[in-house]
Length: 335
Image 1 (cartoon, rainbow, N blue to C red):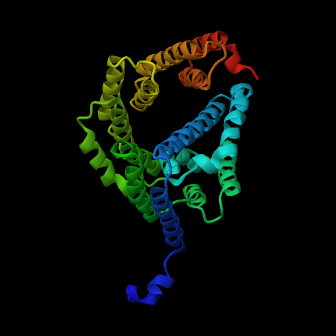
Image 2 (image 1 turned 30 degrees about the vertical axis):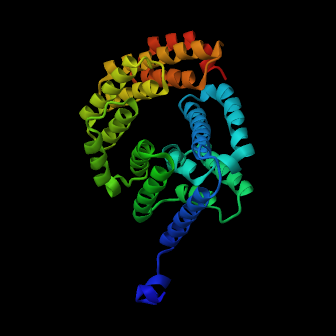
Image 3 (image 1 turned 60 degrees about the horizontal axis):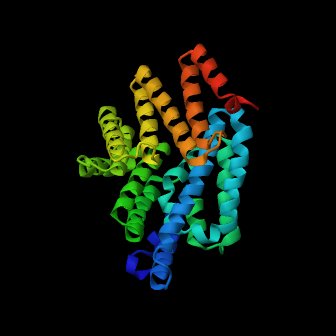
């Protein structure tokens, strides 16, 4: 305490800062222990990939259910199946770096949990699963609880800086770029966009001439979050062209870019373009499913694309097109 000069300054440290310090110290201690161990160097990356995939699956199920309540019959069994995996192996895959890598999706649960029982119950499920797997002071529990609380600006800035260092050391420069993009999205969801706006400008400047699809997708997201819709649309179109040139016209990056383009067209009141993009998204998803699953059952991605197109028709009062869509895919609208 004497190193701080005035002991009162330490004693009066705000509670939210103490919580943040404890969490970040736990993450750094965990990372140091992991690096000193003889663990498989690929384990960290595999944990992150599996955890992100499971969180993404849970998010897609809840999102589709929110958009189209008639899809519950299809989405709930899938949600139960996906949720069974974290419950059985959360102690292995739910590492602090894996949580940081999924911060974009987890921020969706955090921002919506007060208005949606689906997101609230899923958030509680994730925390409870971690509590059952780890001791109370484990950094994964501390981090999840921190993310699902109302982060203050100072907490968010520190999370951005320390998280960037941890992710870069664990996964490399490409992954830290995506982490920073996800943090920008999380900041805007929580009304803290101005807190790290300077970092957004830095990201745009550093990747303006990017050519790979992942960086172009991230660049488009940051431009969109900062209201630069023309620049965002250009980056998305470059991403789509790049993935098609590489023969990846059915890849997750391509589908994500199509979804982003539709959102941008909505923001710019380009309703004709939005409708065309959503139709292309659905066609692409269905073709991908037919090639990979060999089943007529609609996947979560297909249900999501159908629900997005149905919502568009409803918003534009295009009743004939909406009726035709529901006739074409009756199982997506059956209770």
